[in-house]
Image 1 (cartoon, helix red, strand yellow):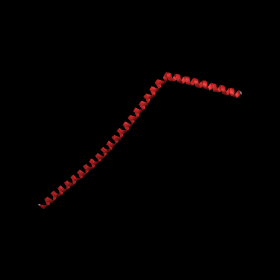
Image 2 (cartoon, one colour):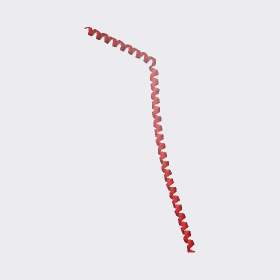
Image 3 (cartoon, one colour):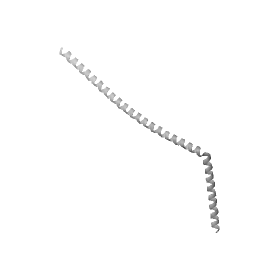
Image 4 (cartoon, one colour):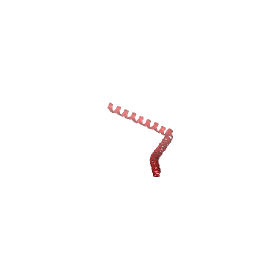
Length: 107
């Protein structure tokens, strides 16, 4: 019997504590609920904006990397073409000199 009374008293105390906690939560919601929801909405909006900025920056960096890689390939191609042109000019000069030398001997 005594145990049942003790259990009943503990149960009543828990219900009172839950009711008190519920009442405190209700007061807290009335006082701060709108501000809390507004703040959470703003934070969610900021999170979305940050995600958009991060995606935009990633896309821009990828674009810049692609452009730099293309510029590097173009520069290498132009360099190789210039080296080839210089080599051809030297070969042409050598041929001209040989032709001049051969023409001078024939006279």
